[in-house]
Length: 472
Image (cartoon, rainbow, N blue to C red):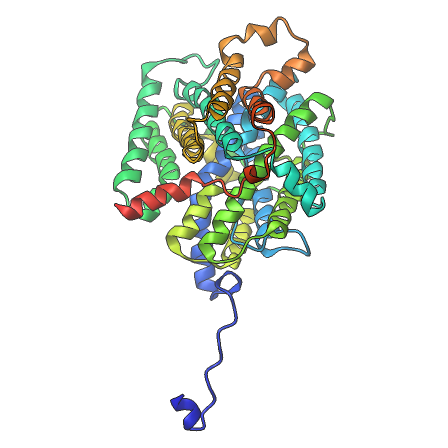
């Protein structure tokens, strides 16, 4: 009022929402690189685990890591920057979904491992990505009807199943890696246990930023110790090129087979729930209203990024919960920070030497870190189930019976290896597939599709962890 009385112009109102604010370049670079640090370990673990299970060579594994990072960068830019009606225009980092790990390994082993496995996987990934993209263009009512298949009792069960099924994968690596001469050696468990202890100490006593990159620091610390004791080897790093370009269909033309495609479609249905939850969560954090069109744009970005992943030798993509937690922690809401992080990831994806370093992490160290991450995934599912009335017998049956189905492949593997057609086995020999399918079908039978069951959010474990730290 004083300025008006003095004849001075009133200060202009700030009309730019923090999400759309373009920060100075130094801040964009600093905050963007922080997102990369928080994201990096989760991003590279998927190709490492899948590549190891399929018995790929170190050179092939290096290429997978580079392709993953390169495509992650492109996918994150599509999601955060947005192009037309594709991309949420929210600060969401895109990364390879953990949901796909077990099914991809099942598909790959069914195809005999090696590059033949990758071709079967990529055919399924491309098809599932295009199907997700098409699904996100459905009319709003049809979209909501499909999403009612995934109320919290289903999403919580699926996420819990995912963690429980993947924990043995981490433990096998902690033992030295299946098939390795020293599998089960106590020395391997010492490395894995030391890595887990270091991660837990960082998460408990480290500052918030150190906590957010505890997995990455755990991998680094465990590898340094193994190197000093002569159990880590980096000979492949010197052989790797400084610069490498990811080219489409590097391993050959993808194979489109019905059973792997069906399995990957189930994966993408689960992933859509994950992205929906993260989109609502990030909307709450940055103060932006998220409607069905915003969710649809986010899912379109998932679909196009997943199809692109199959073309560029990578895997299915989803919004990363770890980075949702980082946005909450730092309160840096600009989506252009994520765009900058995407640029950094593209650059890292062009550096094979950096990927060769990651590929040289000892199996036991990787197993320790992976076990912690998979346990946190299971915890996220339990947290979602905590919102469900499990005193209601129908809900309890959905959870309990689905968990039982998920344990069948690990408990009775002979059913799939000896008494089942190879194609059918590649579809069903996955705890994630059986557990998720059981949860969806049982919920439909017992609870139906009541409109009030539609999921609104799936709270990311990373957000919950940061909240608990802030309260202490």
